[in-house]
Amino acid sequence: MNQRKILLCSSSKVADSDYLDPVLPQLKNHLAETLEHCKKGCEVLFVPFAGVGMSYESYTARVAEKLQPHGFSVTSLAAAADPQKAIAQAQAILVGGGNTFHLLAQLQERKLVTALQDAVRDGVPYIGWSAGSNIAGISIRTTNDMPIVEPESFSALGLVPFQLNPHYSDYQPPGFHGETRDQRLAEFMAIACDTPVLALREGTALEIIDDQMTLTGNQDGYVFQNGRKAQLPCNTDISSWLAGR
Image (cartoon, rainbow, N blue to C red; front, side, top):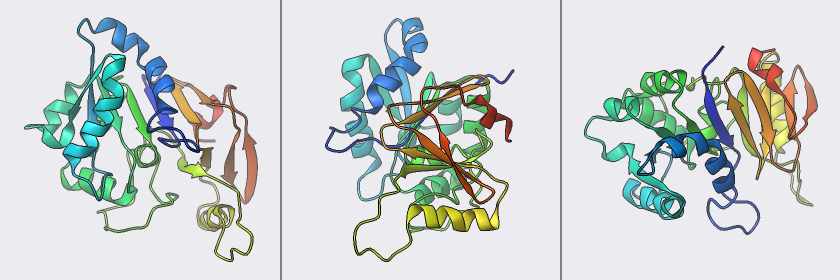
């Protein structure tokens, strides 16, 4: 049995919600056992490298402000004297959203990909949203972001055996003539038809405990594979996708 405790949130906000309000209930539930075992609160290691346009310190402070009232202290991986050791000793790892290309490039440049993979494999809880969810998949080839930097490789953490597409929407504004999300994902299927892409609407998340996976939230998602778009029902067992079918 795989020892995994992973929460992959689509977004940090839904509609006009405050920052991280949709994530907090899922995060608290996901880390309830960890928090219970931490007498002085749970220390979360935050990975801020997706943040562009703000300092890593400011990004960490923004997340800490939201989490501290709920019993979590937040430290930044960017400020760690020994990042490898910080990951190995983390009680939980939180990876924020922003630009996926920048996030992955920083992890690769700092030689931290293997350390993160090892920590999650050892059962350290992993929570990501947006870009932080994107990098949990096989690669970042189905992200919505602009490639503002060039990573060493598009290969990501591979914590799950599929691609992800957070912030999924099938809305097409009237008069809009650019490619829709479905058209972009159809292009991916034309190149990698056997590789599943799990598309997550804002406000939903994939929760993975060992070999079981559920899409949480109040909206269904979709799976794109072999030229087809199939419904991914929320709040049901969808663990079969962990088998890489």
